[in-house]
Length: 416
Image: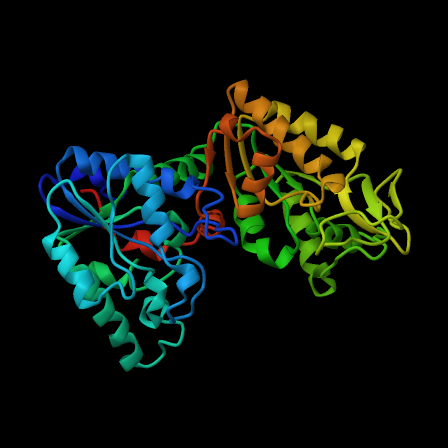
């Protein structure tokens, strides 16, 4: 267990907080979803109650070490100020410039400063940090960041699976480094789901590739009672068993692996559920996210898909089959959609599954949803408020489900 914000004294201290404000912006640089900002409010408000001076730092987008004006954090500073009803100080350009450091130094108790995009500096990600010189540049950058605070709070769950300067290296240069309330909440739900689940425990996995979820499936087979596989990754499992999948997406080099996972599930007495019928189409317009006039859409009578067609959603029989397991589950972890839900006509299966998970939650089940597409799906279904926990970190939650250590968590102070 790691120490959290509540375990240390932050009263009247200058506190450096790593947040994840990587929010979506429209063409006019207006924030279209501020959930990641509001998710950090418990930590920020607690620090304000303790009369701390707060220095926030985050990344936005992928500027790849260059200053990209469209990826400035200025719109985030404005939005955060609106939410809190107070002015947020912001210095553009470079997060460790003389001006930024002076603003941090002059910051008074009860004030908040948001530094400019960390990824405007190539040393933040250190993607090419192979040599000792490159690594030392990351350390120098981290030391500069650390100089702006007395205490470090990790509250950016979306980045803790990355060994970046602001998540790992910074801890070398600051006395106290602990988890914020958002990270504490994320770890609580994920740990309890995996280590101490109320049974029956169900995992629902979707998405495109089996290869993206191999380690997740491997790890979960030792923990769950049932597992549902949907989305394009299901077609690899079906083809491995000799089922015709038409021109559906498939990983032909993973067929043996799929059979091996099915064998392991059987040995461990895990109820492994695959699609039993499909909504199919002869073409898909992913760019326009629409069904073209000359598209043929059908529903199969069983798991087989005829030539010239591809699976785009799960069918009614599959929805009913999955419903029985979801209804009886007491712990549900969901990562990945079950079809091309971005296109309304192919979203029914994913939306129905989302509603079933919400219904199960209403009846007392614990539900944890992770991954950007899954989060979009629960919002599309209008049931996001009925889920026990929606993770703010897709990649981090996925690696946690794989059983991996998260470097940004590992470096924090342990509870005694």
